[in-house]
Amino acid sequence: MTREEKKLAEKLIKRALKEDIGRGDLTTSLCISSSKKTKALILAKDKGILCGVEIAKKVFKILDLSLKFRNFKNDGDLLIRGDRVAQIIGKAASILTAERTALNFLSLLSGIATYTRKFVNRVSGTKVKIMDTRKTTPTLRALEKYAVRIGGGFNHRQGLWDGILIKDNHLRASKILHKRKVNTERLKQVFSLIRSKTNHKIEIEVESFEEFKKIVFIRPDIILLDNFNLKAIRKSVEFRNEFFPQVKIEVSGGVNLENVKEIARLGVDFISVGGITHSPPSFDFSLEINE
Image 1 (cartoon, rainbow, N blue to C red):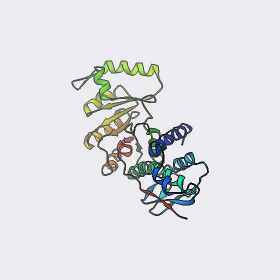
Image 2 (cartoon, rainbow, N blue to C red):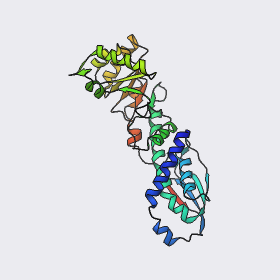
Image 3 (cartoon, rainbow, N blue to C red):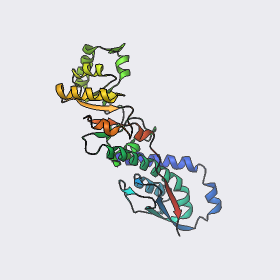
Image 4 (cartoon, one colour):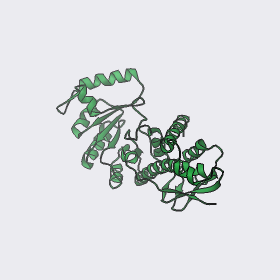
């Protein structure tokens, strides 16, 4: 994790603990002596890629600095059902109070890493990079994008500030795209302005092969094919390869585990998949007291 991601994680952990504990862990305080000490294991109940073990450790340590946390696995490791992920030793009350928050982070991030890895494995042997999108959980984006990297994927952009992506609504709002007609002269002016103000690469979204042919002549750095079928993707790649080989092609929309390999084999450069962050299956963990 980067330094910024670690700092953000700590803030999120504190908020998550406050959300879960509120005025106090009522059940634990009434059932468990404050002096009682124990050992607990975090176990994997699924097969997949681990992500978030350091965050889980931070959850326990923020709640109770005296707890001892030993991880047996690291982020990026392959887990199988029954694997021991970590051991926590110390006050039983602290372990039980922090349990759900720690497992929630582990389940979310490991789910994203595992789902991302499935897409990455499907396109193995091609040049394609699997990328995420901005379809993330509000305030959790940095952690979710970290999980994408652990799964072998790449981050598209962190937010609106660190990349140029001209979408269809930008084109419509600026009257560059009107009734499916592209004002290429006006778009050239916009490109010129962008390049005078920033060094970021220019990426632009198109919705048809006809739009692609008009916009590729202006030579953006990347063209995003939005919801193209396989035939239109193939035509776009062939046209690019023949006339504008320096322009990169990204595909997005309607991508799933069943079709991603076929898309990759068409010769595109990037495939962005919103689903790896907005709807990954949760990875199941358990915490078991083991005296």
